[in-house]
Length: 171
Image 1: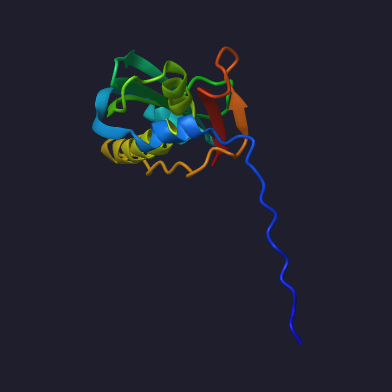
Image 2 (image 1 turned 180 degrees about the vertical axis):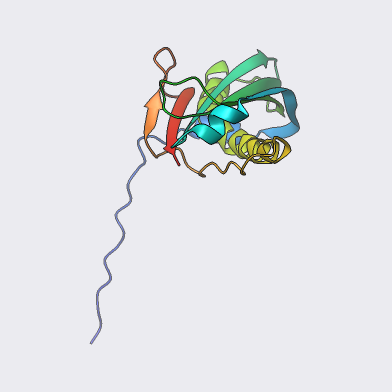
């Protein structure tokens, strides 16, 4: 007895953009590095807090666009406090800058879309590692941030959702 196999239904992805896909495939990461960093610690407030709330803020933007290359940056801030309303006992900030080459001419909308979506896949792990390492240098418990920001995600009041996400983590 033979069985009939159903043919898969071919569907078009309405969100697929061939031009953007070609843009992504044409990108070459040329440079990546820390542009700036800073930290503040109120050790007394940190150790006195009965619970700790971490807020992780990340923003991405294009800083320069040329014919066949562009620069972007990711701004990251981590605060730890007793509650979202209290002054932070720990504040860590860093800015990473990144340089890409692409096929000429680069389209501004593609670069901005990339900065608002895929750039976080490159820069957020760098910031997570930086904050983890910096907490050791501050001689406090290692700060581990989740791989995803799907937990208790909030948006900053003045930032569009695609470029500024603030995540609250208790613990």
